[in-house]
Image (tube, rainbow, N blue to C red):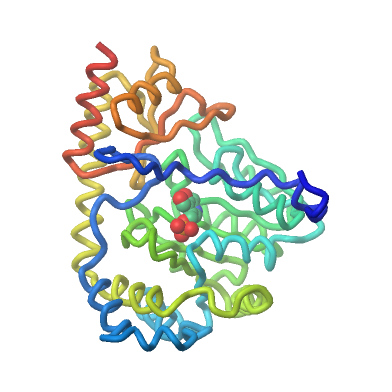
Length: 355
Ligand SMILES: Cc1ncc(COP(=O)(O)O)c(C=O)c1O
């Protein structure tokens, strides 16, 4: 507390990101990064943009990132007017809360979900109501029929990994024609079908993507949203009242190169999916109950061992996973799918801890 703080600062409960420890030889399975490097084309594009003397860094980047919007448009079969880009999907989401979810009525999101959503509500003074997931941790569209100022959920959900089918999303859209329904597809490439295919039919749908997970570019900070041009215009108005140049020159060219390397994307995505399925089977054989995951992480609990103690025991052996001390999920571990070798080290260590 300080007398220099504005009134809102003292009311905030900021998001706590997963740890980025600076310890050598750590197996880091706690923040859902991709275990594989990004496409080599990304580095080539960044080097080309820098040139021999990095002189271009003297100049501001394109404030509209048209080159990136064109690449997203080609990939997803939409127009540039249906695309908004930002500095990571977290920034895109922040603008969504401000531009499209701040209304008279409370917005709705699941009780177990991405923990940044209530933080944005605190920052922008958005009223919200949480909707409990069902007993098997899924979203039931019938629970999203009460009056609301907007709806947001990740699909697959985080940290559960559970996927909601497109027809269920369509039910939510149809039941809420006067609310924006934002679908945060940070993990969709690991097992879902994108709701971007629905944007031409539903003017209340906004789909948010990130290059941090399936494109292995968490360090470059690039995200985007796809929806009706009127929704995009709202986001552009907020963005241009906040920061005109959210994406730097290197991020724009790197993101374009990543989106254009379909072969690398497909190979690494399939490798993560295969490792996830093998890891699920291994954990089940160790006695864990594992929720079905369509993401690059799995959510698992052991019926007889305390999750916080398991996380600590792993940490003592240089393996970091995520444990949330929250109602309903405090006996679960969220484990990012690493390389095959990392996952083998994890299950071998768990075997020893459980023995
Ligand atoms: C559901 C969900 N949405 C959005 C993000 C933010 O991703 P980024 O800001 O790296 O694009 C994350 C990050 O973990 C996430 O889990």
